[in-house]
Every structure is written in structure tokens, then in C-alpha cells.
Length: 392
Image: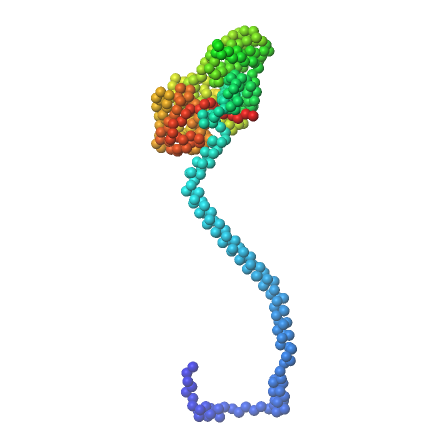
């Protein structure tokens, strides 16, 4: 504030000029009022009023105060949970980054386990060991064609001849479980004569293998294929109740047939109705060379429900055959999955190659090194047999 410009003398003069004020009250009243104002309040009144005020405030504001405290505690818990989640997400992100970097190796490892341990297709040397392989030819559910199914029996089978193993084991087949016709055991007895390299098949008088063309065809074809797959026998002799010959409606009386060795077929995919299993089935017709067979495998045989067995990975390939070796050169831009379908396709290629006298296959420009149990950088042997199934 600015310093006053009035002097003391001037202020005194100004006060003298103001009007006079008189108090008309009685002096006793003035004294009485002064005495009352100076009296102190009782000491107990102040804390009592304070206590009452605090209790009133607690009563009025208590719910809000406690709600506010609960909310603050929950908020802290939520914030801590949020921080933990963020930490977990951060750790998961790191794990995801690691998974992405290792995705290919992990996928291939898992695929390798699935295709080598489950749902076996063809049977190979490295799986046989000291066991004995027996192949049975079983009609499909509609009896249109024969499906080769191979089993592996223990080393005790080596002490028996092939025909004993064949006849003793055929009653253990589970055809219906596999989606095929319940066909075995055959209603016949078998005798092998090593001196003539022939097998005699004796049927009872009431046999049913001559009831219809399909039954007759499957009977003769299954006998031929069974004996050709499991032995070196060259001829079948037929008898009925020990008497020469068998009567078949469309063939008449047959006493013997020569064994026709299998060969020059193409293998296709076949999936029975309501099943997930894929069988590899040879064509009913023959092909002049392996190129023609592979071309047929790209289209299938829809009339018999035999599906294409060449997956896109093998659709573009060049073949070179030298003696008993086949070299398959793939397109450089080919991609390939390590899954069951591709394994089955490779099985079909190997089985078809075997039909044309091929013993080993070499793959060039393979986009992956490991396809199931196969190292595609190495020479690969053709299978021992098709459609391996385990039995009790």
C-alpha cells in the first residue's frame, strides 16, 4: 500500500470536525454486558460438541467411506492382475516367436511320429526283422476287386512252411473291421507238393464258390494271388471231396490252373464306406510301362471307386529307368508335405515301381529330406508287401 499523505495534525483536525456520538445507555448495563462476554464456556462442552460432530459425520459419510476403501482395494487387485496378464502375454509372445522360428522342424517331427507309428500302409524291410510276411487277397465290400492285406507273424513261423502259416493264420483276419468282405477262412483244405511245385485245393460238395460269376471270379483270383504272393508254386490242382475237379457254373469243371505271377499294375487309393483307412489297391488292368501306369494313377478308376494316388507333390516328375533302379526327378518348384496322404502316395509309387521289376528308387530335387520314415536323400528300397495290418 502507498504511504498515507495525511499528517498527524491534519488527522486531528479532521476528527474534530466529525459529529459527536453519545451513548445514552446506563453505565450499569454496559458493565453487565462486558462481564457476560468475558465469562468462559464450561470445559466439558467443547469435547462433547466435537465428539457429537465426529459421530454425525461417521454416520452420514460412513458407507461412502467404506465403499471408497473397497473400490480402492479392488482397483489395486485389478491393476496387479492386469500387470500379471501383461507379463504373461509378454512371455507368451516370446514363446510364440520361438515357436515360429522352430515351426518347420517341430511340424516335421510331429508328422514323422504320426506317419511312422499310426495307420501303417506298405510294409518295408526295416519293419520285418525276423518275422514272416503273409499276404491275403480279400474282396472289397462290394466284391468288385481284391485288396491285398499283409500281416507279420513271429519268428516261430520260420519253422513252418508257407502254406501252414497261410492256413493257420487266415482265421485271425478281421475283414469286416477293415471295411472288407468277411471272406476267410476259406472253406477248403490245402496241400503243397514240393516235388511238382503245386498246391492242391480240395472243396466240399456243398461249397458256394460257384454261385454267381462274381463269386467264381473272386475265388479263382484270390487263390492265384494268394499262392503267387506267398510262394513259388506254379500250379493249382482242384478236387471235390477228394475227387478230381471243381464245378463252377461259368467255367464248368476245372481240374487245374497255372499260377499267373502278378505284375504291371498301377496302385490306387481305396477308402471303404464309413472308414478313414486308405488301402493301396492294384488296378484290374495291366499297363505297358511304368510311365503309363503313373499316368493312370493321376486320374484313378472312378467306376471301381479307386481314387487317384498321385498327390500334387509327385504330379510333375521325370522318370529314368536303368536296370532295376528308378530315378525320379521332381520339378525344382515342387512343394511337399510330410503327412499321411503324401506317405501313401509314395507307397503307391514304390509298389507300382515294384510291379515293373524296380528294386530301388532315387528322388532328385526333393523339397524336404525326411518324408515319414523315408530319407529322400538316400536310395530307397521298394516295399515287401502292401497294406500292413496287425492281428491278434
